[in-house]
Amino acid sequence: MARTIGKAAITLALAGEEELPVLLNQVRQSGYQVVVGKVGSMDAEKIVAAVETAAKRSRLIKAVYQEEHSLYHAVIEAFHGVCRGQLELGSILRTVGLNFAVVRGPREAGPGAEGEWLAVALYGTIGAPIKGFEHEVVGLGINHL
Image (cartoon, rainbow, N blue to C red):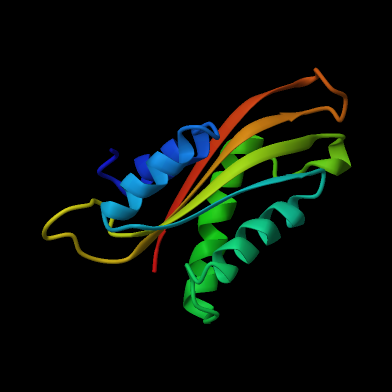
């Protein structure tokens, strides 16, 4: 299994439904906390809100400024990868369908690991809101707590 927080997040976001339970177990056994989900929208704010809501509901982050702020920056960094720098969707007739993974823990798993970090991975499709007019995208954001 992935030994770094970023690889763990990306692996989980890319995982198919069959392999996801096994990968979730492996990542958790490595000492990471995890939440995964799906979101689709033409509204960038809804993407951020879906990831933040999942992280709060699963108690991956506490409802304190520092943790919410760290998560926000990790999501925005990942979203830059998905949108290739333009954080716009509906206003320029783009929509996304994304799997997401949020991972909390040290940058590297194993003995001697120090610090707490958040990694957000987004994987899915982006394109015009017409079936068949989309392509794959991936983004990763990592921020310290």
